[in-house]
Image (cartoon, rainbow, N blue to C red; front, side, top):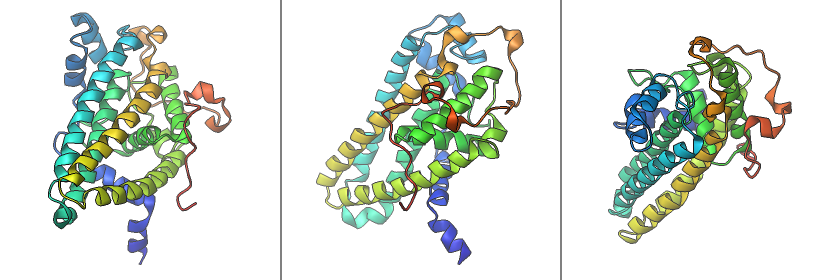
Length: 290
């Protein structure tokens, strides 16, 4: 009974989908390869080298230039996920048991792809290990990125808090304790529960759109295009406005700390929204079941 309730828990449901999508082929983005490819048209070889070894912000690459590279990646990923979603809608209602789970997985997989690309452009560290494993800190920050994409104000504040920790300490790694046991962790769990509810709603809409062959393909592809691109744009706007992406905050190499971020911070719930990089137009996170 306990196991059944756990499966039905929106938070557990979301984490299960996230981890399953992260294991799909092609979902993990190699940071070095991507930055070299994305910046090749806009930057010198020296700037690219420093962006890879440190961060694009440390290389002095402007946010305006990064925005161009980000828009290219968003266009590519949106076209790809929309085409795959339309293809999944072709067989019609008789193939729903097979196509709907696959469509949800590939959609979340493409959300992971664009989240990684935007994170690397705007000076976040490598999110996956060389083996492609998803540790708890990575799972936490990806959950918050998804929350930003869905327009939740609480996720905006939490991502801003994490970015602020890393910018102040000039750390090259995610703040493990904050994301797994510290001040940000409760918000990770809350956002995961909210996303679990939202994904159930979207899955139902996807199922309905695929019920009629051919027409379902057009509706499914169009629905994906209409939702994926704005979500990617929302994450891009938020990450671009954080201190990590600001080249004016560059520091000398000797100041770089390659380790755990110190968590001597006041509760970010009381901090002004502007300091946390919050999008004032974003909606508040909803309590699942409310």
